[in-house]
Length: 141
Length: 141
Image (cartoon, rainbow over all chains, first blue to last red; front, side, top):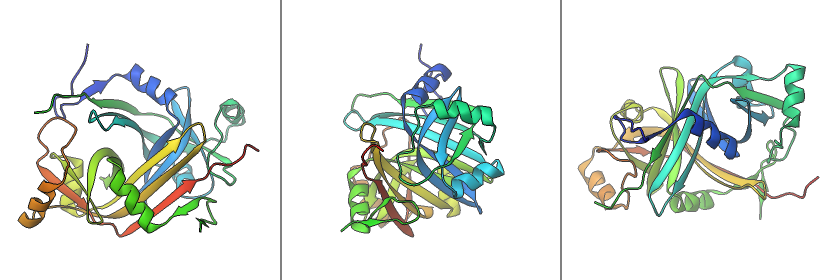
């Protein structure tokens, strides 16, 4: 059964499918507020349970994590010919992972940063909300 | 000649190539701050000169535009097997397009919103900054 968001007209992707998509993808984008301005970063990430984890060097992402800032994380996909697409958005606070047991477990994940340079810090976003939307292919008007 | 960002170790995508990538892609993400929190939306967009334009219904994106909010717009691509990727990020204020001449011109663009429902408003982001980064494929360590 398919549910449609009445406001947007988009099909709702249910929670289990959102998690499946998060587990299947490798690259997402995280947005945080810093000094009143939005910042947006692409990251390669992994799932640790239902939490988004990624590695980072010093900088705005880590600053946000240390502050326990509120963040948005997004993945999406689209088919240009079909003019269809989907996105999954999760929000929550970000934190630096410092617990040694957690770090041991994260070290087992297949997550090497793609970018060069030392990325010694792990950042975790624990989803407080998780939602997905899909544009289903329509007939041309 | 290739330039490398000394801080991140990433290859710098120069301005002309950023604009070429913006012209070639169809879907990006816009982040704005609303009530102190980050919001992130995937949008299908077009270029009008060097400005990013997209269509929207009422909501947070339009509210931000009407406020002249500062926004970040991002496009990216990646190759999972090669562990390589690129992104182009542009920042600037967003505004609703209301000038009839502008609206006439935008109406000529090949930009139909993919999502269902009325998206009567045009939003424009005039880039104040434009930058791109590329992760070049490396040999496995």
